[in-house]
Image 1 (tube, rainbow, N blue to C red):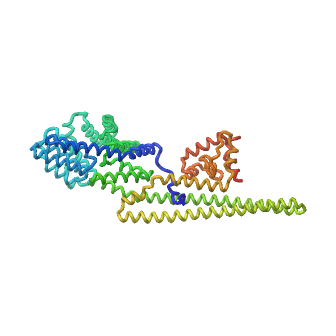
Image 2: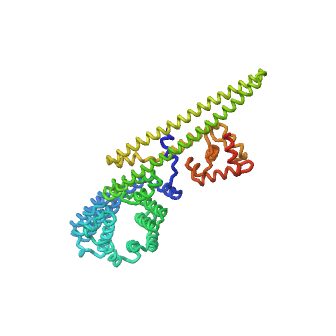
Image 3: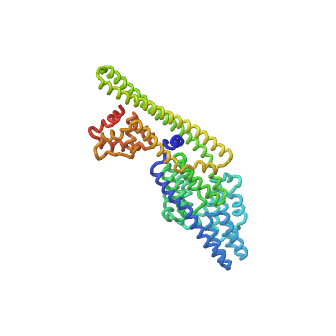
Length: 533
C-alpha cells in the first residue's frame, strides 16, 4: 500500500528547476557540516573567554571581553549581552567614559538587531551623551541609529508612535563623516540609490561590496542578502535565490544563528519544493530559539501561516494523483476485458473446429486439449483481472482514509499551536524518492503480468547492440515509456506525468530507441502497439 499512500508525492512533478535544485543540493552539503561549524566557533569563543578570565589588567580584560562580545554577537544573544554589560562595568570602574560609550552603543545595537526596540530606544536616546563622543565613536553611534531606524521601519511598525528620526536623516550625516569608498560609505550609498529607485546603479555598488570580501567572510553574508533584495527589485527570481543560498552558506561557515537568508529562502521555494522549505524553516527556527532573541522567532512564526496553505496544496496534488490512478485502473480493466474477449473468441473457433473434426479421434483429442488450455487461460485472465481491480480499489480507498486522517491530525496540531511538532510531522525528506520507486515496481509487476513476453518482443524490434534485458520483473526507463505507448498513451506530457520524468527526457528516450530500431524508425510506435494484439 506504500504506492497508494504516497501517490501524490510520486506523481506530482517538482516545480524546482535544475539550476535551483543544484544550488539547494550545494546548500545541503553545508548544512550537513552545521554542527561542525558550530563546534569550531564554540572553541574559538572558549579561547577568548579563558584569556579574559586569566588577565588581571582591567584595560586588557576590557579589550578581550569586547572581542568576545563581538564574536558572540550573531551566535548568542544572552552571552553577548553578558559581556557587553561586563565591559560597561569595567569601564565605569576605570572611569573611562570613551570605553563605556563604546560598550553602550554596541549594547543598543544588540537590542536593535534582537528586536528589543524599547530597550534599544532607552539606551541609544537616553544613556549616551553625544557631546562626549570621540569622532570615531560618533560615527559608530550614528551608524547604529541608522541601522536601528531601518530595522524599526522594516520590522516593528512602531516608527510613527515612537517618533524617531527616519534612516535617511542619519545617512546624510554619515556620508559626510565616513571616508569615501569605505565599506560603510558604500552601503549607505547603495541604500540611498535604492530609496531613489536607481536599482541598476545600486546593483553596481552592491557588486563592488561583494568583490571586496571573501565568500567565507561574515560581511559577505550581509552583502549577499542585500544583493538578493536588489535581484528581487529587478524581477530576477533565480538570481535572488542564488544570492540567498550564498548568504546562507556564509552564515553556516561562520556559525551565525541570527540570520534571515535561510528563512527567506524557505519562503521562496515553498510553492515548488515543500520538503526543502520545511527543512530549512525548521533549522532556522532551531537557530533562532538557540540564539534567544525575539525578532527572528517572530518573523518565522508569521511564515508559519503559509504552512497550512502548502499542506492544502499537497492534498490537492494527492487528489490529482488519485485521478491518475483511476485512469490507470480503467486502462488496465479495458485491456483485461479485451484479452478475455479475444480468448473467448478463440475458444469458440476451436469449438467449431472440434465439431467439424468429430470423425477423427486424433483431431478431436487435439482440439479438446487445446480447448482445455484456452479455458485455463480464460480462467487465469479473469482471476488476474479481479486481482488487479481489487488491489487498485483497495489502494485508492486506503489513500483516501490516510489523507483524511493526516488532514485531521495536522489541523488539530495547528489549532493547538504546536507549530514545532507540525513541522516535524511534515518533514518528509526521502519520501518522494521511495514512493517513486514503489510506483515503478508496481507498474513493472502489473504490466509484465499482463504482457510477460513484452521485453523479448520489444528487443526483437531493435538492433542487436541496443537490446537490453533487465532483471526479472523489472523494466528499464525506456521500456516503461514504450510500455505506456503499447497501452495506448501517445501524449508525451501524459507519459512524463505518469512516470515523473520531464517531457524532454521522454523525447530523448523516444529518439534514442527509434534510432536503434530495425526497419523504418517512424513506424516503431505502431509496431509496439501491435504487440498488444
